Image (cartoon, rainbow, N blue to C red; front, side, top):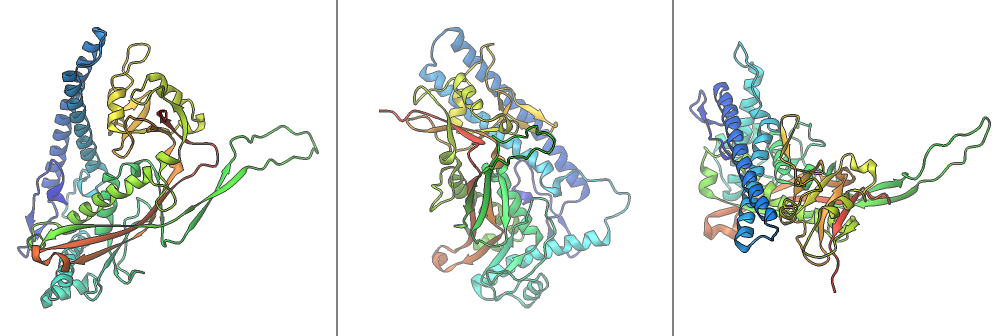
Length: 465
């Protein structure tokens, strides 16, 4: 994981046995912190320069009261793409300093690390090696006696054809044990499961704003709904009977749709001990899984697929045409959502739609998309009328009958994960290429918790003739 993180270089050190270790010494950790801060400063500086160029270009066009020429439109799209690339890099580096404990600023210690900490690091390194040996055994059928013994000490049964990564019940869970998995495999301990969890969060866009629900099984889960917004307390006299008002009650049923993905790995990479295969594998599988599930979380039909919020959300406002958007369209969408849900609301839209909104100004001449603001001096977000904006590639662009923007409280959109993720290696189909595949099976669903109050609404284009 260390060697693959953007903007960083691996700083491996030797342990007492002369083997490569992926743990960083204290001075190297401090060095990474300084490098991260320097990289963030440079990226933010370049992003400000790109934003200034975009504003200058837009101001020139508006001052001359004309439309963008073909060359100007091409330049605008180029600058907009670069702006998005920089924003994503900045977000990744920021998450590096807060979400991954290994890179948190270390607390200076006047004495060496404790024996317990050394034992923990040794155990984590041993398990990573054991994972490599288990894969090698499943592919080739043989490993050395020393490697077999290491697998046994790490709790990995060589006879099992699959491993089970048990995702934590919430994002704060850290301690996990090696126990038999329900799918016949063996549960992977803390290190890989936590890295897989971090990778799912970093590469998942809807996952950053939706509510995540983890369950131990994939059985149907019934979730009751109640629309109580219209009910309120009333004044009653002494000894006066109270007439109860029933809320509108409904329910949604969470399913568990099985998704599968695979990553091809060369035998040379498997044998390369300098590569942290466990960390790389977690990121590769999470990125591929998110590309499939994220599309369903937005565009799924809700029957044979997860329920997509872009299809389920009610229309808050419709634009006047299929290929344009105005500031009034955005305002009408905002005020179509009940105030109780606007307090925690966010925007979700495609990069194409955001690029169009960046050209819009309000009645005072200010652009709708605010300059990047700092939240708690740590996270950076773009906003429109004060609400955060999240770009998602699976949202619609312009055209007839398209969902351009989603706006509302996404805590009412729930992603249900079955917390056991199966990992299976396979080599037979790819033997002639000297590569093997690691398959990942993951069960998930998504549902919109809407009892009639419509906490999330959509800006859509007309259907056309």
